[in-house]
Length: 307
Image (cartoon, rainbow, N blue to C red):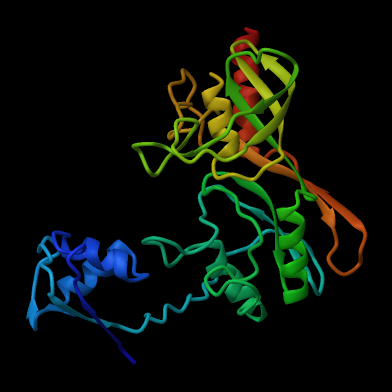
């Protein structure tokens, strides 16, 4: 059922664009406002106007707010690589190339679509659009993820991630030699000041970000690392390493792609995960080997730079 809103513009509000006026008077997003105006759900003095219309004092602005669309997530028979399962949790090895949950412009072929097919009981666990999801990996990152199968598990795992009780470790290959065999990168990051789809140290809203690294092996002008993020910011490992002058190999977004030997994909794998089981109340830990495609690339690199 639609909701109807009505506003009378004051002298202070005269001179504002119609879309800006509505963004100040309602909780609607700019995209929602634009859509309502385009669909002739906004009237000014009983007439339809463009978003650029300049509001005048005493204008009567009426808005018909449409009920939110029900966006059901479609279960899909996408295979899952299950590492561990019990009544409360599920551990999977997420492959590179799959998005964790539906989002802007993406409704199908995500991990959540697969989970709802194989485990329909997780529907309603936590967020409606992210059932069972307590953390995420980037689309091109492979590796361990824990999924909650009950509300109790969801709330407890969510708490552990929030207070940083969950330990995560990754394997990655980066360009160049690190300044030391072990180190800490502590640089605040956030949305890039201009390129909004990227995360950067150049941001107007910096958030704390801490990453530890340890060099496993040096292969000529490359370093094979174990990386442990303390905070869980979007693209944190990739941005921290890139901003330090050592982008992750195969990273198209943050500068790791100009290579003599092309890497098949982003060289980043979540190989280790430990946490307190949400109902058994004991620490459990899991680890995975480097996937075949990344291991093959590493072997190729070793061979080329050995001869």
